[in-house]
Length: 70
Image (cartoon, rainbow, N blue to C red; front, side):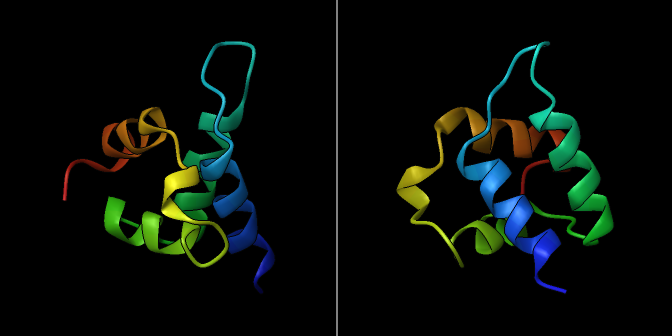
């Protein structure tokens, strides 16, 4: 099912950080659901749908915080 992969890509490309947003929680859930364990894998998913330049630097930092550095 491609929907969870697409949802992860969208959430990462447009990640909003802050208590009022739930993007980080959604990303954590989708990473677990998709069994993604590295930042590289997560970025590969995003770049299937979006250019890597669309990812904010904060998004990659958030992924590193969740998954650890590759």
